Image (tube, rainbow, N blue to C red; front, top):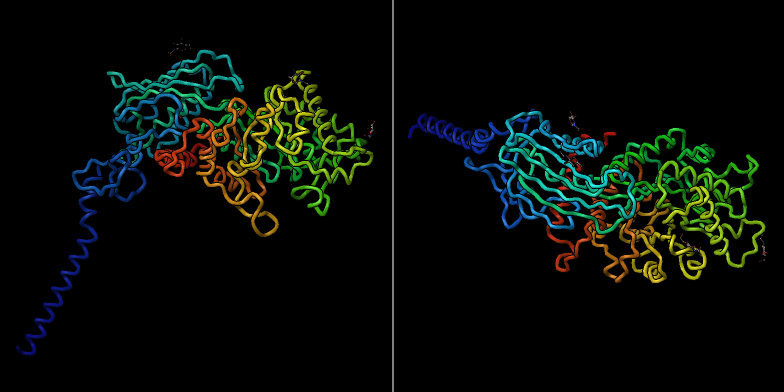
Length: 604
Ligand SMILES: *[C@@H]1O[C@H](CO)[C@@H](O)[C@H](O)[C@H]1NC(C)=O
Ligand SMILES: *[C@@H]1O[C@H](CO)[C@@H](O)[C@H](O)[C@H]1NC(C)=O
Ligand SMILES: *[C@@H]1O[C@H](CO)[C@@H](O)[C@H](O)[C@H]1NC(C)=O
Ligand SMILES: *[C@@H]1O[C@H](CO)[C@@H](O)[C@H](O)[C@H]1NC(C)=O
């Protein structure tokens, strides 16, 4: 071969290799996409530029499996596959019979019509908003449905306040008529049952990403009612202030998961944020700042916001302990020391955490102030069936060191007498009517022998917050008291972030994962008499929580708690206690909630 030929051959060969390389590279980059684009152009027309879908979902053995798409695939999005595959996607799971259709129909938000809407204006408006918040694009295509009618029937429509005995049951049917109209009928004894029915209906509606439309199940029948009457969530707004907006988000989450009691731990020794009309001095000297207060009209409006969402609000001003800042104006107004040990050091001698402070039980003016506080709390919440008297973590050393005249050989008796006097003032504040359920945090006072000496078992309920292995709860039940369960090792949502001052593990570490929250079922484990268990309450203390991490501390664990209280499902001993469907249902709830938060969860 001549030298010139060799060079030519090499050049040609190099060129051919390069072309082949470019061709292969181009093929690799475009071929699959090319065919996909043809398949999806018709379907995927969201206003946002999107990456074409590569997956479709098939229901196999009651689970949605991901398959790569081919040109012939009919594409099903994950949300639609989930809704039509295996278990319900409801949270909490209904306790009565459920049948769900296996087909879905598309509709537009504008097609929703409400019959009998005046019966529950606010609940319908909130349902309407929830459905609207699912919508992701304005693409209007011809929907499968001609109409979507929501019909409500309430037997006792005059009942406007939730009580422990209020019937919260509902039934729901979804039917598709021949002329392609969906009729959702909700029947309930009360507004509160009907409202739960609307929450369930909202969970049968979803957004299909691929078809870019709202979808609803073609048929369903559901009967449902809760296992416990008291399904509470406590938020502390004294360690850190929470804005009204952030509390509304909490309430919307609660209503979506059918929790029904918002226990608002208003004050503590750190701050006193609520402006009480009869005793404005408390907030004036106790709030963190002028912006960090709750005005009476704000509290009332929030109570109403909660009520229409099926939630009653219990306002707690903790006493005699956990009361410091806000209580130091007594001497200036000629009332003497209302509180002792306020901001006392070293704090570890006088309280569980700084700053210290405890009411002065020897000062009679304290009881006059308490009566005024109680009058205000009763008026602001309108709540006359349940009252929380506080009673958390009294430190007797504080009283022993600071009280002048006391000659009690056992200061528990002083504490017991304080509680009786406070109860007397509560009754006076309530037009001399006894409040049927008065709650106290569990403490030394709620143990024998003080318990039976000072607390009337037909009126007092103890919120048992100690460890689930402690004898507190079974003892209280054995002694005939009603209990509200808030076991620290299961339902304290603030734990697991170390101590907030010193280094090292905190007393209430570790973190309670959602599975621990979900699996807690002390009535089964200890064979406790369920009739004496009013229900449960998950608690969020806020030493290390403010409104920027409030939502993530609460959800989805508060939802896990909500299902425990509403449905109380059996534990599956073969799978860490948790039934397989729980994972998908909780995941669906979380997904639905996070989408919603982009639009209307924060909306007033
Ligand atoms: C539902 O929402 C739509 C769109 O915002 C609104 O026009 C309609 O009045 C709402 N209906 C009810 C009952 O709130
Ligand atoms: C409206 O409610 C009343 C009483 O609850 C009931 O008799 C009536 O049938 C309802 N109307 C519709 C259209 O559902
Ligand atoms: C001290 O004890 C006596 C006898 O028990 C009692 O009468 C008196 O009221 C007590 N004093 C105070 C200040 O509690
Ligand atoms: C306990 O409370 C009930 C109901 O409020 C009341 O009827 C009863 O008299 C009370 N008992 C005592 C010893 O105070």
